[in-house]
Amino acid sequence: MSGPMDDEPACSMERSLQVLGERWTLLVLREVLYGRHRFAEIQSALGIASNLLSDRLKVLVDAGVLRTLTYQEAGSRPRQSYHLTPAGLELQPVLGALQQWGDRHRPRPAGPSVGRRTRSTGRAVHVGFVDDEGREVPMEDVLLAAAPDPQNSSPGQSG
Image 1 (cartoon, rainbow, N blue to C red):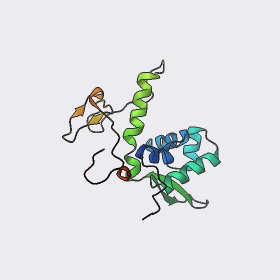
Image 2 (cartoon, rainbow, N blue to C red; image 1 turned 180 degrees about the vertical axis):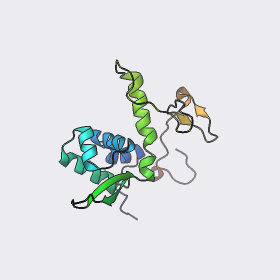
Image 3 (tube, rainbow, N blue to C red; image 1 turned 90 degrees about the horizontal axis):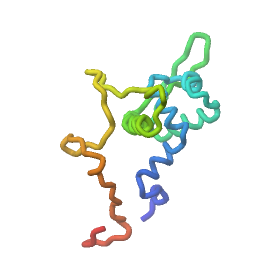
Image 4 (tube, rainbow, N blue to C red; image 1 turned 60 degrees about the horizontal axis):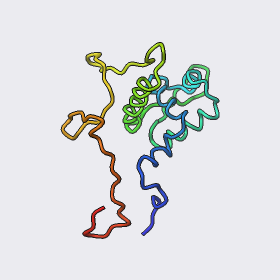
């Protein structure tokens, strides 16, 4: 039986990149995480062309990463503001990992432009892998292994 997902890539990373793989997309998400929710605020912070920003926002809204809320300033027409959905909030570690990697491997002479800290204590945090018991796993102990292809295996076979 075939369905709408038959032409979707099997790899979850590839499916994610269909939504997130454009450079501007991650920068738009960064700005929303920083508290910029209005089109003009995001555009000004990024210096992005309005047509590109409109396209990126549409992709993120259509994918369920952002949601819109309507607001209206006195004397103006109603406009949309952009806010993270739960799926969008789950991208915070992805953006944090990119920042962390950039701080280590592409550092600015002036130092990091953003610090990652806890809200409750202000202590510095870093992004890492955590096991199902909540313990951090050293990077050298993490193995990314392809899952078996369900279309190429039959009952009793393992991949």
